Picture 1: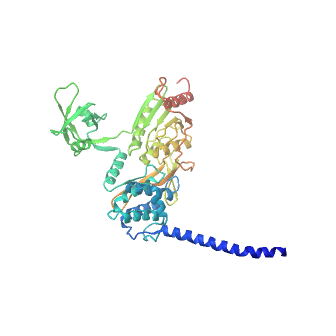
Picture 2: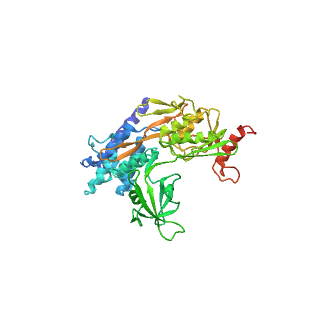
Picture 3: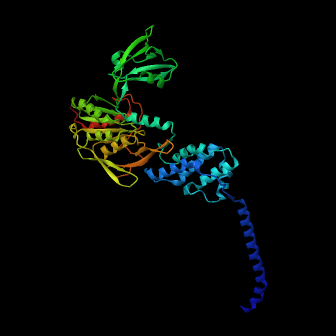
Length: 467
């Protein structure tokens, strides 16, 4: 090998030159890249304080079937920001990635790029106020969550939304008991059965033209409702135009407590009952008991419980409904909050419980059955009390609450998640029925529709032929 040494001595200087050349090239490239980097402009983050607060509250309260995906949430916020200031993502986001400098201490680590994006835009647009886009960015945070029901409400809309949600769970309200509908520029009344409106003589389709002698023409539904409202037990004079009448008709209607109906029932030939629950209000449990008691008087042998398109509502009412079919102390499910502790929910003592232990039950569900309605379906199914018919449920079994922010706005967030009696997490996959049936119209059968007919045929086949 010694005869190769002279050649090595000639090559060695060339290798040294190449190494130095490569180092120089790398240095030039590094300098070039360094030239592209920019210091983050010195601006305050106060304008985005609402965003930082919202992010903190999400971290402290958010609980869902899936863990929080910080990257997706931040991406949602960044997307909203770019849309708000009307900037194309490229090359803007690339330039942000090259920026240097430490953000203020109050900026969350996950939000540094968002802060830099606002700082860069504000530096080029001095009149830009970051506070004006803060609400839009918070909306983007919630859009990045997997929960489609999560929403941001500003200080104006939050009280209205809260009132609407709470009133939606109430079993009654103070009024005249009539549905008020805007149709072709007119206000049309449809009285509820047994309501003060019906008792006073209001007919379905009556057009409301005056309240207490004052015209309501051209007014909105809410404006009319506000004028009709008043203390319990007092009367209001309504002027209506009725089909077949030439002149307006004056009707005095008492104001009173109007019970909202969420349950309907009927007995079908063959001893099979039908119980429909449109949603769970505070009084739904009582209405379920009353309906079942009435059906049971006619020797009901089986029952179809219809909770299709039921959006949930009162969890207490859902448990009360389950308690009509399950023994006292039966596990209804679990609820798990941010602390990770599971709380058992069981059916309590029910003095009004009917003797329905031997009753055959089929439950109808569909893709719009959600939350407490899904939990009820799982409880009746897992306990062996019911067979499920229809299509897979929505898959939104989270428990939501309003999380208020310091400026009077709020976020509607999932703060707990539900588990079935078997301990299975109720996920976005929804509840799959035992018998999958798409809903289509059918000429035959009592229901005129496939899902009900399949459930009825199933129950009918389980009962004695002669009954």
